[in-house]
Length: 210
Length: 224
Image (cartoon, rainbow over all chains, first blue to last red; front, side):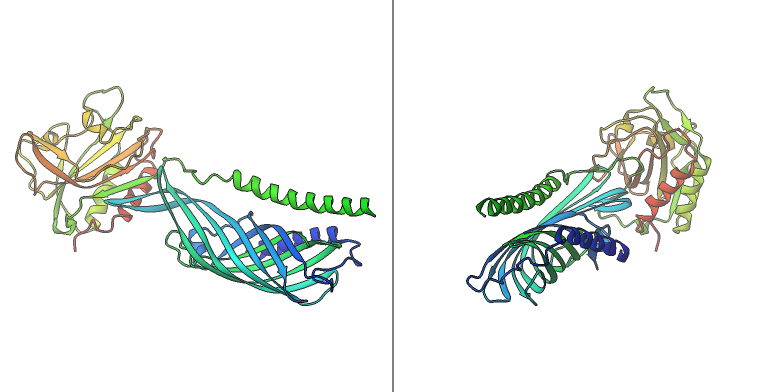
């Protein structure tokens, strides 16, 4: 798993370096003294299930994304909202489901979809073309699960609370455009099958305009 | 200058649109409704409210009934290892075997046992619940010395379509049979292992493994 995280981060950094080449003179986010700007970010996201969530699906997900909107409220501080989507899927050689009067076992498909909506706060540690930031997100979301053993399918869905620390960096490509790299540790109360309080590490890469 | 600003904005818009489109495409191609095949699935059933630990003895069919689409009469599958495995499992769980019953030559009297074990090899595809009851290759209570009785199933069947090579193991309550027209003998435990012997080798390792799994997921089938 650590190797996969490294690979994803490595690829994301490579993409960022390529995109950010020659951006030394680019203006960073919140650098204008005349106005506090708005940032819109769209990122692709990989998710690495952690803890109990691995009992449901322990395979890395490469289907996910995040949409963020930030509003500068101070020279280094932006508050905003984010919406994310993650798709976890795994086919297992063996799984089981309890029935009212018995049990079924066999090849099993497990799927989960998680949608989150968070209020966010980002603190930018510096200005310039490379702007690392720390942040938090608090909110909630919806999750749905689908477990199939043979042709017996059990679905469930519900609402959950969510919170996450996040760390990232904006790599300015040109004034008003940056590559956004971000890592988040998503903590939720989502129940995936028998696994409570799903959590995962999310690694995002995408573009931000401001 | 204006042209440059316009070009920069267009570039930004294209980049954001590209990522948004990729995410949208990923979500649209995500099918949450997938399901695996039924081959090798094992479903075990237990009669609700029946304490299986209160039974002590059993009689076992000495031959595995063979149900085929051809309705070939009273025919049997060659499966001595499978039968031995079933007996061994039950004995290891504390049940005492008191008789072996040959469905080809039904005994004149019912066995003096709490339970009877019936084994059936299903060599056809079918979707109706308990479709085997209609086939000559399936062993009825009369084949075990209990004419005038019928099996009864105290559970709803899971809607899994049977395919050739499906094993059916049934354990019925002889002690609690009820007289009537016909009389009823409740099956208190059953297992269906789907498509585990597609080639008709009922002693093959996948069949035994499926039997093991059926028992493993039924820990309540044991004497105290």
